[in-house]
Amino acid sequence: TIGSVSDLVVANGNVSPDGFTRSAVLAGGTHPGPTIMAQKGDTFKINVTNQLTDESMLTSTSIHWHGLFQRHSNQMDGVAFVTQCPIAPGHSFLYEFNAGNQVGTYWYHSHYGVQYCDGLRGPLIIYDPDDPYRSLYDIDDESSIITLMDWYNVPSPQVQRQVTADSVLINGVGRYDGGPDVPFAVINVQPRKRYRFRLLNMACKPNYIFSIDGHNLTIIEVDGQYVKPLVVDSIQIYAAQRYSFILETNQPVDNYWVHADPDAGTNATAILRYAGSPNADPKNRTTLNSAALNETSLHPLSPPSSRLLQEPDVKLDLVLGKNLTNFNFLINGVQYTPPSIPVLLQLLSGAMTAADLAPNGTVYTLPRNKVIEISFNPDNSPGGPHPFHLHGHSFAVVRSAGSSGYNYVNPVVRDTVTTGNPGDSATIRFITDNPGPWLLHCHIDWHLYAGLALVFAEAPEDVAASQPVNDASKQLCPIYNSLPQQN
Ligand code: C2O
View 1 (cartoon, protein in one colour):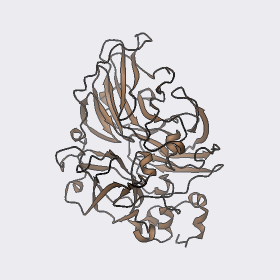
View 2 (view 1 turned 90 degrees about the vertical axis):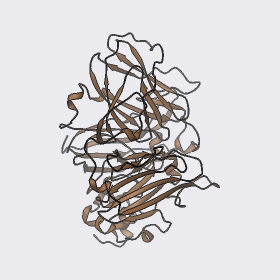
View 3 (view 1 turned 180 degrees about the horizontal axis):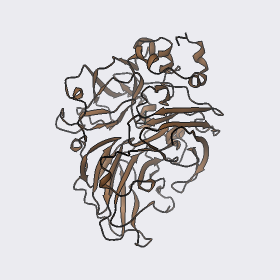
View 4 (view 1 turned 90 degrees about the horizontal axis):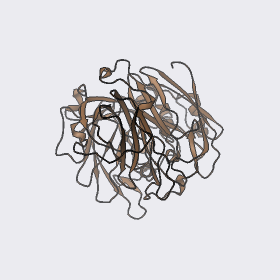
């Protein structure tokens, strides 16, 4: 609701989503955290209070609202050491922002270290009273949100980067190999209705092939953007991506398997249960997987800005590589490490050039109001695919990994795109209309931690005027007061 402040307490608690009990980092006491629901145009006021005490994991925190552009509110983007210092234990921070016209399916997660792998993540939905597809579905509420996550039975500091998660969680529950038969998640539906399901991959690592036996999925939204309806029977969804699809409960009253097959590890299932069918497991797997989603078949409902379809002003080739000695990741030969002073605060105290902001080469400056084209070029070191996310923007995917060519007519617009194999680049375009420092990174959290990121300082000279930092974020960074003050 507009105007009122909601409290989000971040605290440790024991959870056993796959039958194994461990301490976790919880938002609002649950994993995943509570769904944040808003209406188009609402102002968000979320007071995050840090009550973390378990020192086997990080005890400071910072929360990012994935996919929201934070126009004029870069200081609310929640990225530790890019837009703010982490919130120390015993402290709180008021995130206050307006998402403008943005609608659709988003999520929130810790953006400090790999903390979201310990549990700090949840859905964020912005409902659209003017939804152009409103006549296509009957039901769109909390019951029609499906989250996919990976889960580890040790705290993140003990997880080896190459390790496969212990379990896949569908709507927060799953099973690990050798573990107990935790009851499957059940998605209850009424027969002969049309549901708008919102599917979120909130994992730290895997992508999943998602399907529901006996049912087609009609995709209408991708990462907060409406698309032309596309009928598929499975969706490969990478870390941090989201889809809305319409499902018609037009099959015989029964139980049907829901599948989430990860790219590594054991497949997971849940149950789609029509009202009137027994409380029992479905019988056979019936998925055909004959119409798998292909990203190049997704097209925006309204065409992207024509500027994105012309020659770009700036072309950036990013070579994604690996240091074969320590297995850290590199972009154009540089491993990202977070600066000690948030880039935003550096900009506000007058540092303007990439060299001033990060002598190690992890900050790139971008000029204002230009079309930027980025190509992701994995080198020959293993480790992909890498789902790349850009903060502060969505982008047109003019070339999808694995596709045969470029689309300068009706490319899908989204905020997280996967890169391909060596020699198979993904290419995106966006317009620099949002001054501020924005992270670009692989959303496999272990890869981000190992350096697969960079910061765009977008229109650095306009940052101070467009988003003066608030006093609270200065207080989080005691070091700020030792910097030269410009405003
Ligand atoms: Cu989901 Cu850097 O974000």
